[in-house]
Length: 514
Image (cartoon, rainbow, N blue to C red; front, top):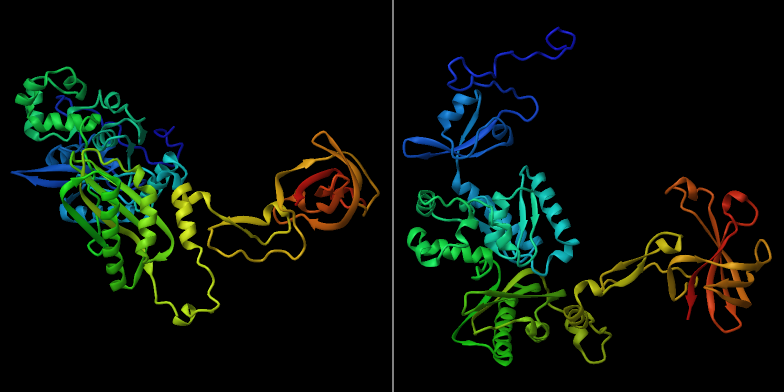
């Protein structure tokens, strides 16, 4: 239909993409700016040739791949947008992304090669709703910046590095201990080997990581070098590969290098106490207080351990910091000994001086709950502590929400509300009540019958008509009643007893007093 002119689209040349008569390749492919724009490639100078280091999706779809000569790419596709590589600018951008990750996602972030980031997600993904939701959030963030991304989560940095670049999916999550099976079929280049080691492996016919598993270590070290064995062991988790976090130059940090390794709880606590005093002095000079502090301990076997504590308010109290770290020190495994300890402030805020009048004996200063909240959050987790405050809504189940523990609740209604609110109103049966404004005389709830001896109400609550049509005329009449056994209930009737559109006159229990 396009060739017959029955559609308005322009018909492409019928022989533009067919092979030449000599079989020597393809004609150049013209690409217009419609859709995704001109294909773009990044090239760098290598000897006397320009080598492609990166290509956009449009260029990849046309058969252009990194490592190809730029002259070959120009012969295949006409109208290429060729740009020079800028390694220094790329490095600065990756450093900025790593700093953003350290400030918003995880305290331990580092640049991985020239095209990626390493993020240590231990103990942080629950803040974002789990690993899957965290991955979606990172991909969406990078998409807003104009980047595509591939994410791999594994127990070792080497396996994550290999799967992110050579895996089959955009998001890959590997269970702890399954790194060896996950990288078995990946190409040998995924192990971050040197070009000489890759050339030697090609001469011996080794092209997959799995080919190295059954080979003896001695001959393998002679052929590929000791670095290849170390990379393989790091990817499989047999050798530790610590991630050195990227720390901003102005980040407050104090460090202790120990003359001899320490391993007892008392000695570690003493080092933490000395570091906390130094950190508080540093923060006092800057006029700021700490909110999030990370302790990094370097073991003699090369592994780097981390502990993080958070404060609900900015603080410069060294004793308070030591108490919180002491609660977490049992999680620190010193192994054969710790040779260096570092305290790094990831998040801080201005902390001004306190008015002297509040410190005078007999003043009206309130007790500060922040230290208690911090200690409880260190034990039970920050998500376990909250306060309940009111929301502007007449519907009881929508009128409350959880807030941070130090936020003062506000706007509580003047009328009485039950101490315990049910998650959902539960239906009542065998209800006997005079219509339309009297509380029930008896009812059955959870297979138990109750006889009412006193009642108060009704308190009328209208539906929020702006939410949906079902609440346009909805009405609830709430009553406070007391049974013979002394129990007090908060129950309601759907409908006003006059208009049928207001409700079906069914009864529900919504809360309990006392």
